[in-house]
Length: 121
Image (cartoon, rainbow, N blue to C red; front, side):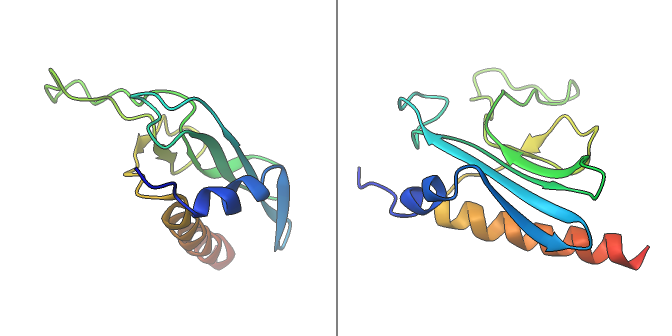
């Protein structure tokens, strides 16, 4: 399997805080880990958007498994580690990790939408 070239970009952004204006900010954490069935891309990451008082209002990560809703039967299915949190109390919804570049595109695209909604309030 060919290495994802976007992983180096993601790792280079590790521990970066990126100002989004108006007190909002993004934090990126990313580092290599052993490739496993749960983390086949070999990278652990947490990309988060925070409001001016520091509360996380959006996050993409693979720090824990996302439990499927009880109403669905998931016998034999792989549980998702890659997921996103759409607000502070959201336990996470699965995110289909394609590659590191697409992860950054998806995250910052959603950051733009969340900030647009927040600034309209």
